[in-house]
Structure formats: structure tokens, C-alpha cells
Image (tube, rainbow, N blue to C red; front, side, top):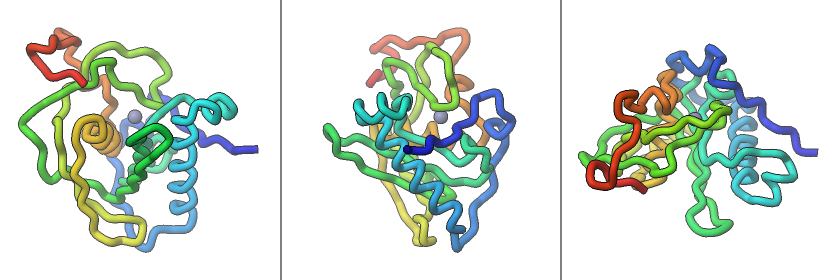
Length: 182
Ligand code: ZN
């Protein structure tokens, strides 16, 4: 039987801490955890498996959500039906970002936030992320649209920021004229 990850809830203190940089070589424990995260994110986006294992769909996870305050993120992006691109970035940094801002029209979700939070999260339409792969090789990723939002969301986790922190309480929703909604 598939053993589900223990994903911490937003109330856990690990979600509000600033994570430390990971060092190389990565331990076997971290490598296995990363593989488990990729599997679970993939399963969660495949309807039959999500139902079978009782998984809420999600495209990203960061180590602090599993109680480890290290700067490691994993994103599994469905680029076309049942085709997934996997990203594992150790010590990710946003090195450039577009002036253009966007938001997910339906709002954002988070596997650590087990309630509905309404509102648009304004983020950069495009970002370039630099970091390292699991073997310590330098990598650079250009992300746009949904994938760009995912990188910004996951990197925020490394700094103890949750998506609803970025929702403007005085103006939680934007119109299409004010902000491009995807
Ligand atoms: Zn999240």
C-alpha cells in the first residue's frame, strides 16, 4: 500500500520559519523524500490515483511542509494530459522577474492549507530561477504563467510565507482590466 507523505498544516511552526540552505552531497534520506514528493504530486494530479490514495491535487511542495527547514522545492507540472515535467531545485533563487504581474483567476491552493481562501495572489508572469539539481550541478529555469506562479509559491515557503499573506485584505480581487488573470 502506498504510504502517504505527512504534510504539515499551516498552523505548524515549520511553515513560518526561514529555511537554511541545503548542502551537498544530499543525504539518501533527502533523495528518497524528494522521490516520494514527486510521486505523490504526480499521483495527486491523476484522477484515479488521487481518489485511490485520497490525495488533494497539488503541483508543488517545499521541504518545510514536511517539517524540514531546508531550501528544497519540488514541482510537478502537467504540460499536457498525463504528461508531467518534474522540477527539483535545491537552494532556488529568483534571479530575474518580469514587470508584468498576473494572478491565478481561481486563487491559489496549498497542500498545507486545508480550507478555502479566496482572493487573487499577485505574482510575476515570468521568473528565472537559479539553483542546483540533486547532484549539486547549477541549473537555471525560465518559468512562465502557471509554472511561474508555482515557483514563486514554493520559494515563498522557504521564507515562511504562505500564499494568503500576499492577498490584499482591502482588495482581495482584481478585475481583468487591473491584472491579467490566468
Ligand atoms: Zn504551498
